[in-house]
Length: 131
Figure (spheres, rainbow, N blue to C red):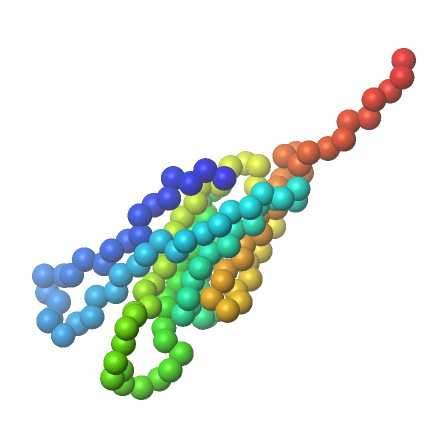
């Protein structure tokens, strides 16, 4: 899987925007990519992103992850040492990935993507016949 990742889109303030309007920004989440016999496993760190606020899609051989992070506690912030940010990252997929069988799981802020190899890309044992 080649990674000509696309930079996270920064939302630029509109000249019409008021001073009280909050501007969202996105960062590329850190990922680990493992190759197994069956395919690739992508682990992406997406803290604060709930399942309903996460979008994973494949279009034109481009795998896109986009998520909107929110703190789990409702209410007015009185003190904050860190801020959760939205995530955005894209990967270009090769023909060796079976795009129709990609799966995604989210658990404790970790997104796990399984990208199975296409059948023709899987290694196989070739039978040797005796002549």
